[in-house]
Image 1 (cartoon, rainbow, N blue to C red):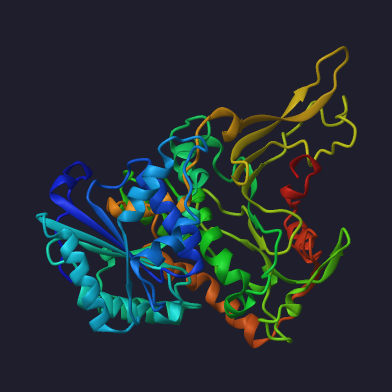
Image 2 (cartoon, rainbow, N blue to C red):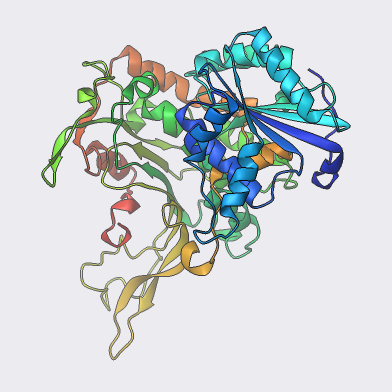
Length: 509
């Protein structure tokens, strides 16, 4: 495929940009991708000369297509006087091409429309966002690259997870994509890497000298990366049942967060330097063992008079499915900084709350003057009196450090309290959606937050053996009630390494 030198953003006056969303009639496109594109346009982040194309099998004309996506568009400010005008301007740049995903003729028709939008410019650059099922990734990559690549500029493709379901299928997918695309053209998206608090991880780590000496086994007792949803599959279990929570969340979202958290300082903020360090961390990780993993599956429950169906009651799920909807595991890094520190990863559906966070639990104060002699606040154990850094990714984005502090007044009483940076209170600004950030990065050729193939391969190397063992042994997931904290086994797993889950503290719920 033709490649050209990337122009700096300020030189877009000589270039036109075409963004094609393949699978434009799907939920992800309608609810996330098109709203993200409009938000970028509304905030003047897209180049002046851009055109958006939707491509799918559904028969639509431009008018019907614009009507379909308009209902999910909204402006940053509810009282923005120019909202209606901006929305109309955006929709006027949106066009639709119906076609089969494997049809060179249909992609050729799309190419003609793109060329017409680009004809007044020296070059035309193109982004294809593949919002489609994984089984047709390579079909679309082959057809689109062959019939609709830019002939005067660059062409890039954003590919959504899953990137295979084990090491072998991931390698097969990469091999097929490489027949039509170079690694530099493939942007493997993990939308969690576009979240504000995840991008802030490198700033927190490497721009604050006070944290650097603490960021190691000498001071940190354990690290927890936690993801929970308060809803189940809700009739959409057909896709989920093919993958399960380990493949869907832990092997990608949480492992990427772990790599950014634990990596050494890169040589620069360049994409390749950052991704090199992430790969080093993942290579140092021990292969995950079944004895260090707990699997769960939610069952039905009546909550506040309402019946919440269990996973097996979802009509799209096989009645005897063993697919886990919850998993927790302990992983270890064999390097000088993190040797012996358990990293506990936990993810689940149909839990008591919706949340994603990183919890860094520090070691006890040796020889503490206050542990026995003066006493803590009522109900406060020495366990909860340790320092803890919490990075709340969602919702209510925040960073807070739990410290021990004297309660004001006569006498001497110590309580655990927070030094709190809540983004909603500190920054009176709208936080961009992860899809906005990642689409803009792709347009600008910034690959820092996208996954390189060797990262992906190492991640699968660490999880594929245990996933195969789970399926071969038909491991029964532990049942837990809808809306609960998950299976009891997760607590025993943490206790095995002398750890308590931090998200179960009453002051953090």
